[in-house]
Picture 1 (cartoon, protein in one colour):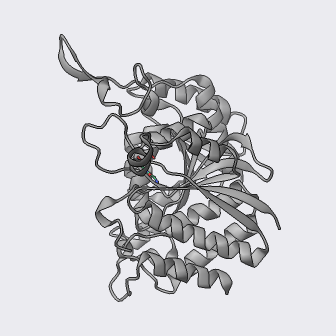
Picture 2: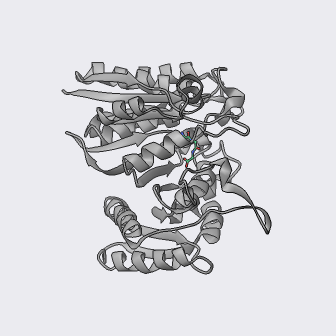
Length: 369
Ligand code: GGG
């Protein structure tokens, strides 16, 4: 039994809808196991820009600072020509709290083998985790000022209109993320695939060199390099061959959107963003579904809340040290899928489609069983 403070940053579009379901599940777990979760809320993204003039205010960052974990929804939306982008909220939190390790597990539930356009025999046994570097690379490689997506980065020169992004990694940044991957692999099937573009990019040549040095410290873990293009192909050809994939920021973002199709939908993939800051019970972190704000379906009770609910499970595990409670949620999600409940993104013939709130309620009922 314990008291924990969780900052909820629901954000834009479907963010508030899916986060509300995750919160409901957390409240149920609190009641069942005698914990007290205090939820404190802040604005992020487009919602914050409209209300407060910034994608995230200093006050909201301070709220995060005073909590055990951050439960994040999604940010994004149309901001044509805007000076401030909703995504800057995420980048500020990631950089500010040094959340350099983004864990994105990809698991294909048995009952969803036929929900994908990919053949079930290819999907069978898919259980991998992408360890995405989150505070470096192209996302942060801008000229002055270092603000991702800032429109002023498009400039006029004697060559015409141009824009520059730089891909910079230091040895230290590579080493710490590769080490996270090896530590995770030790608790799994003991295989690490380091993904880069070393035939083209200097930063990848350094990435390879550092990854090999770290790998030598883990002789019990099988290690391989893979070019990012080959990785994209193998993910669809033989996903079960992967255990832990470690890669740089942008490659990780793209590969996990692809890999989400192995799990049936973007709405199935949770994530944890972690750094080195400790809480009383674990590691301070930010937890969010990998999907964006999906404005096209916002407010229609159509979004899949399972990625948000599974992110809440990761929060319990990594930041609050509540492993049992995390597993209870994960098992409940799998059981709901086994019992045939599907949101629209997982539409399957013969299966009834239910809404966001109903799916949240199903998970709660299952957690209580
Ligand atoms: N919940 C994920 C989210 O809001 N994604 C919006 C986004 O821009 N993400 C970029 C990224 O994760 O790097």
